[in-house]
Length: 157
Image (cartoon, rainbow, N blue to C red):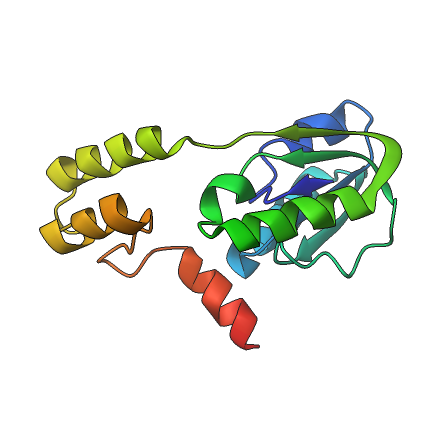
């Protein structure tokens, strides 16, 4: 399973190398793009493309996956409670001898990126939300293209 896999940047190469992949992401738009690519390129090893929140994997069975690729949710989930829910769900759907490949962005690195964005893209970052990043770790993009809005919209459904 590629959790938080967006358009399948990892799922597609793995599928092309013979692995059966489940692509899961919160963004309806990104999952639709992945589905279009599956049809266009006739990729057969993508078992499903699911719109799911990483903190609720209830559409999957316990111990369903040999491997979970987790290269996004841990740095997009800002709240400790959300990250803990995500990790618990990943371990619930992971087989006993399964593997997890995970990545995250340390707080300091993320802060540097926001400062860089403050100078390069002032339409996205002003002094108030820059201060919020340093005080809370949360970033709200000013141009309303923040994918976390997908999370909020998904939770409201």
